[in-house]
Length: 302
Image 1 (tube, rainbow, N blue to C red):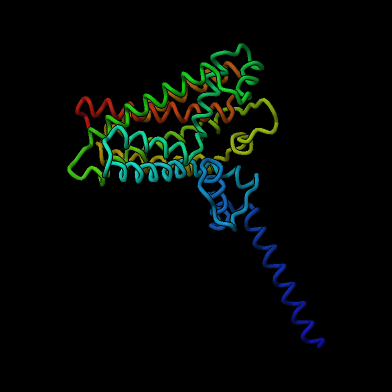
Image 2: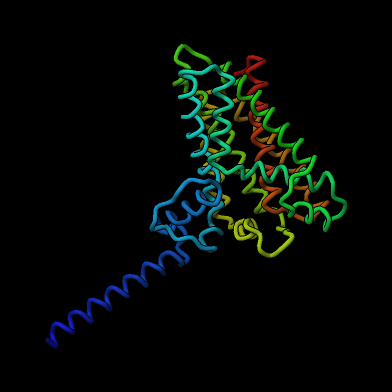
């Protein structure tokens, strides 16, 4: 009986040691440990989308602080799902309706996360005077005139751009056109990468200390920027391989202009960035990429 008790006690100790070691592995400094990275990745997915995560995934501020490295990859997942919905819709529906349905799917997947940031920024910077008033308006959940105009303009322009790009890349088997997937991957991943760079290089400001984006936006590690940059570079190279290296040469200067203008504007008016600012930059960057591809397609450069 004593021997059985000793074995049971030993097993319990071993179990506790294994649990403690597992927790230490998750919360330790080994940022590239695959278990921790799995949790960090799904923290990023759940934070930026409405997609579910496995039940064993833990959610905490520590993982969110490292989640920025996976922003471009989350954008690629959104792009792939939108492409699937667009491809299915094109089987039975005209191009305009298929594009609208794909845009609706995109909003449902992300919960209009970035569009909300764009609308809040439009209301705040359009109707506010001074840092405090701008942040107060930005914190207000109500949508104003500037926000409505910004959303209508953004969604309308995105529809026109996607409609043209889909029509431009029409083949006999349009449903399986790989070019559409590359376009969506490029726009969704690289635009989120620019938000990561802006987070890293710009001070964080918020109306209150309980901002949802504060754990991510206020502490971005250099390693996260490197990982996100490598991911974005991969999608940019994929686009260059499909559309020509002119795309590879043209997009970085364009994104640099968006970054410089946005950073200067935000610092001048509120002293830094917050989650709404980052959402607005993502939307503007995505539209800029699609607009550039449309210009190249219209001029016959791709």
